[in-house]
Length: 120
Image (cartoon, rainbow, N blue to C red; front, top):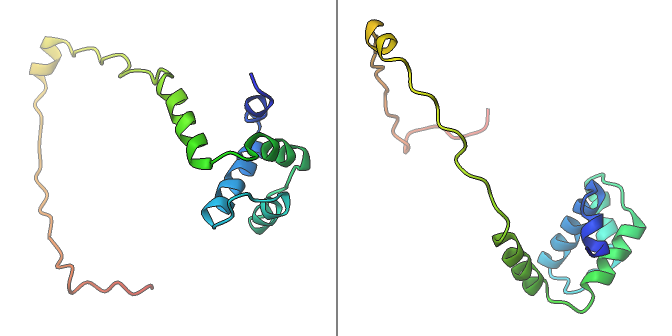
């Protein structure tokens, strides 16, 4: 397991990766440590210099689109679970003995064109 993957378990690294990706989306092809720190500071998050440097060393000279595509391929092989256990059917006698009352509620449809959407 790489150092990068081991470090991902902490919340700080998640924030660091998110800040890096925001910088890339903002037009920086190779964000610097300072770019990441500014983004983290703008939302009141602490920056961990060691984790920032680890991230930057792991993604240096790599295309973010290719890294994301490779990550998706790895995630595709991870089992996602299933539907879980089915609910047990109710006893036949209990289902037929209790009457069920249903009420229909009348719902008025609003005309979207006349609705006031100004903030209150």
